[in-house]
Length: 267
Image 1 (cartoon, one colour):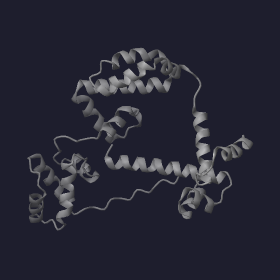
Image 2 (cartoon, helix red, strand yellow):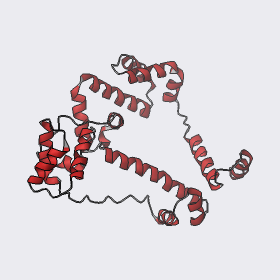
Image 3 (spheres, rainbow, N blue to C red):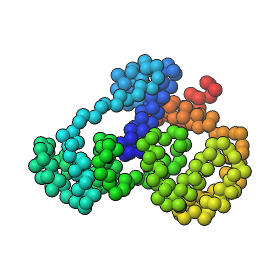
Image 4 (cartoon, helix red, strand yellow):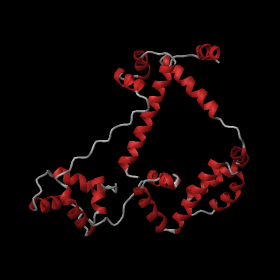
């Protein structure tokens, strides 16, 4: 997952939570103006959310072509050969007909130098045969997402990033398998798989995995019960969210007694 895509998903999750808060307040009978004041949103945004049949997805704007696009293969070729300065890049492509600013070239080189993924248009050109970088760097958060997400939910681009990671080192492949087993074990509540998983996790070459295993071992009884019990704290979490919503309606100034009066009669 690219940095841009990760930011888009985080932004979408934030606005989805806000959309659900608007709908919850609207269903409680609050006016659009009152909801806007409570959530500190524009009234137009509240109206759009209330009248939308589902969560209004943000429209993705098509990226405009850049004057730098034809020169990106050349920049990547020079980078692979060891060139790291934006000024020579700019002089060479300017002599070849580039009419854009040096700042655009400097930004492109900076993205590579800072070990970020290249822009999406660059990735498309790489797939079309442009020289590739020696390595594509992913952040720890992106790697964690790839390791924990179900394979069937990954995009083709994400799968193409995951496969080289697992093939690079046998320890990474082992960690990926451990992560996937842990997610399935929790999701399917298979408590009988916990001890075999812990035995393998305790000898993992990665300290974070060993630390997780040690923490689970210290609270083994509670974790095993959570994996085998039919009970869930989902209802409790729902009531906590309801209390927070009620408190927001009173601008966060509701005391315990006021909350009790608001909640108990409706219970």
